[in-house]
Picture 1 (spheres, rainbow, N blue to C red):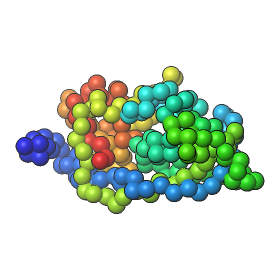
Picture 2 (picture 1 turned 180 degrees about the vertical axis):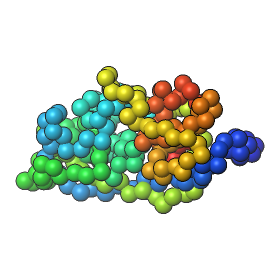
Picture 3 (picture 1 turned 90 degrees about the vertical axis):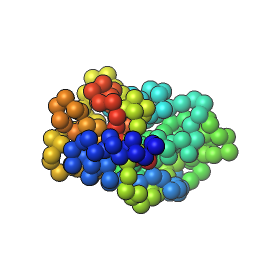
Picture 4 (picture 1 turned 45 degrees about the vertical axis):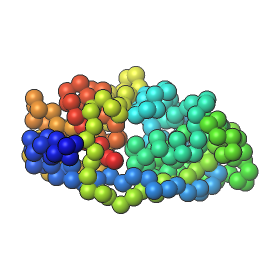
Length: 219
């Protein structure tokens, strides 16, 4: 029944969006440790992929200065999961509870010794989450495309931006009849304007959620 409902909904949207729905974004298969690397201050972070965000998905603690912080729950796995929402290749953990994401690393070079990453993760004391101004850097390895996006209520996995940061910095719009950008991680169709909202994260900005009931997000 769920599948037939899904197909019925898809048949009601433009062809360009149908093709977009058929393109999948990879899910994380596993992650691998790279090493201990030096980080800069808030004005010059090594990994900056979360810049401009306030919350994303179920990570509702405030994101500041390009990092997510939680004093109780951060682990290697949770940081990997957070960074997968932007399909970032690399993630870094620092000082027990800080999580960073980006597609490159190493701006400030490697630490002199791997032992400089020596603080336990708040969420799992058996894991190491970097050190003082030191990131434990990992790489996410993603699964091949599966061929489908998952339809979800647009309010199920949401994104908010930091004060002063426009929400449309995390999505872009195009006419539904135009060839889509395959780099998006989620999409929504706005019936009133016949426009597609293509998102750079697998989470729906609240601005988009207010105008579209459903979104298609990577599995």
